[in-house]
View 1 (tube, each protein chain N blue to C red):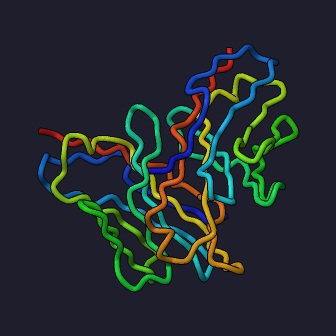
View 2 (view 1 turned 90 degrees about the horizontal axis):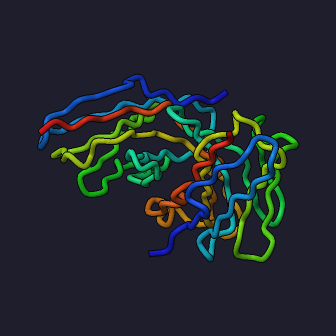
Length: 118
Length: 121
């Protein structure tokens, strides 16, 4: 069964360092997303990406964040200068254009990358 | 903001019994989708079930069913015959649906706060 793959599963970084979280979406999907979940809290939307550009972003997604689809298969989230409060689980997700019948079986989240900023 | 509300921070159920996890939502969209995800202690998000606002029948997936009451804006998850492995955090989520050439697409997901389900032997 196709799945969204994220690497690494865990990342520990020092405050102020740059990190790149990587995702390989499902191959025929067109829409890509990043979400984050601070420990013990709900999942929050960061950004959506379609047709090689950001389609929507949240208030959380400030100038420290950027996304890229460098090679047609990977979808990356970069945090330029990490802060302690960036520590969270980061989920990549993808979806495809589909009719009603195709939607109700799509489970489209990756397994997550746990980022710890120290 | 269009909110998703899960009013039960925690729920307990006896193994083999049914349990209902509540979810209400606030939306002005005509077309939207509702999801339930399970998040075990390992952290991954596991898709359980989806309901489209245009679906006339309630969605079912094995032991999971979604009690969709559109007028009340509720989308409660019913788990029948609970198993010990069902113990996890459960999130309700909503997305806006957009019709484009070639089909319909999701927007971003807005999540509720989650409900921790504990299944007792």
